[in-house]
Image (cartoon, rainbow, N blue to C red; front, side, top):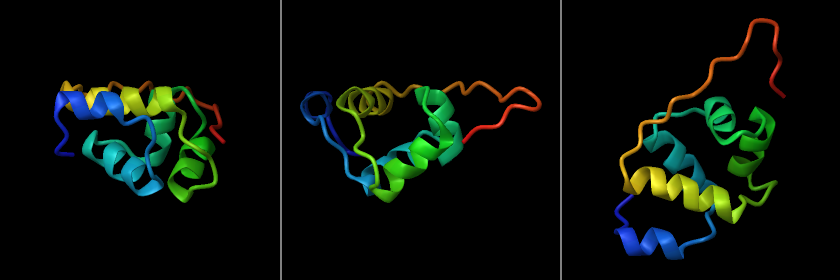
Length: 84
């Protein structure tokens, strides 16, 4: 993403393609992005498919991570835990 610090703060919506690119830049797949964001893997997949609207707070958080070069730390799933 080639946004400057002012641009990301103003963009409160994100297309499914932009979400997919953003999580890729952060080194996440759909399931790990869901864990990082505190939503299910299914919800993350729905963001990518366009079946769910990406909340503005999620958009701002992801863009902030890119702007500030944050390396996500994703919690591991516990054994026997199923993520939808």
